[in-house]
Length: 265
Image (cartoon, rainbow, N blue to C red):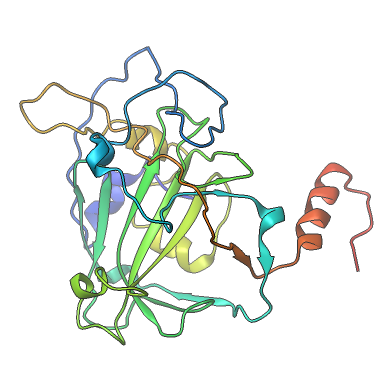
């Protein structure tokens, strides 16, 4: 995916404005905090995500994220429609550091940047996107797949502009928001998504740029913005639906292991 060494140059030519502060990376690398699963199978503990430092703030309920996605346990849903993504990079307003990540916000008074289809009954407007990443490339994503981590995860946050008047109202109600999570790794992605993130610098070295950001404010002891993901949560009674059958994934895995294997019919 193309994203980070050209960040400053590209942002100068885009409608967005960015606030970045760099620091030196210390030699010692922390380990990912353990929760229900840990993709690196470490046992050393660290503090929770800054949002959940106090036990009073740890969310309750039975529909919390992120989760470990076990694709073999997912249920194929033939009624899931293709997800249509239509993004206009000119709707980008600005980029800012909120103390936990950096957010790229978009003008959302019209349907210039929207998604529809998939499990959605209406079109949803893009409000912002942000990232979660690790101190090193071995982890960083919030969700995991069969306990596997990815270096980073992109969250594109949309709101239901058909049922609600604004993002703030939609964020408080059921089915008000739709968040697309994308695992970041090198390679090509959906062309509309690629067009959107091209407002950021080329992502071959983007994660190193992310790791120069700070959790701390001016005048405070500098703390690198890394490992800004939340602990995994229990699936509870939820079902993960998929738009493809299991044999499709098995065929992909078989072809990777044996390129000469004939494709499944």
